[in-house]
Image (cartoon, rainbow, N blue to C red; front, side, top):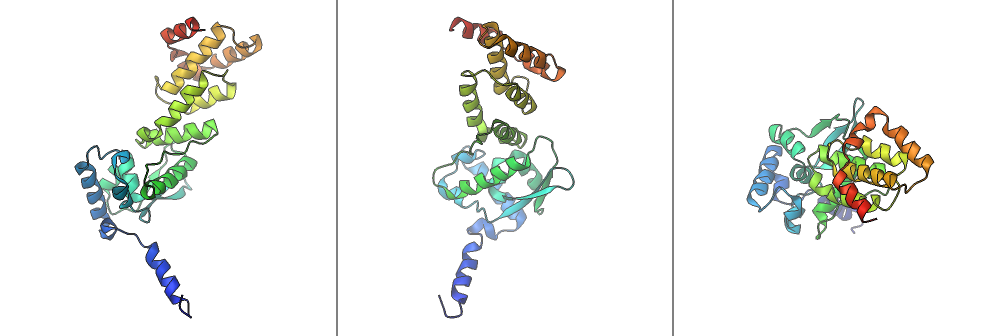
Length: 247
């Protein structure tokens, strides 16, 4: 460090600048370059197939501002190039509007906390030699909101492990009424594997009387509500019969 401290500050500023060829391109050039790389790499539309050096070029110092939620929207700064690769929804927006530095998402299924988690994960994707999974929140609702947000952004391939964890655990417990509500509120597809697994488990434990009569009545009262009709429709009778036979 020099006497006036200038050398250290200068070095810090240099380290803070985006690195790599793509960082020096215009916004349109950055989008075109990344899309071209995706097309040229084998299975390049899946970030997991990018090498560590290729992911490093998607420098997290280049960010875009995502406006999440209704007015007043909350700003989240997300690594631009990594997000363009990971999310076909975001990619379509910036291919059409390459000079823009922000995008707005007011979709009810896009959670602010989830977008912030995705942003932190995308930074790690750029830096780590081994491809990191998106960390799964311990709280079930937070985990399912993260999954739903990723699905809404077309990033479902990166949250498959959330589904795997849920499917492994639900068969080992009697779901609470809160869990039932959280799953119904945070799944959308009729045959969502998480929805089906929960429906099958409820059917199994009630048919085999694995819980108290009061709990069975609580389940029945909840499922009588209109919003839970899709849960009843999701029961896979063959799967439930197999569960009963294996009991």
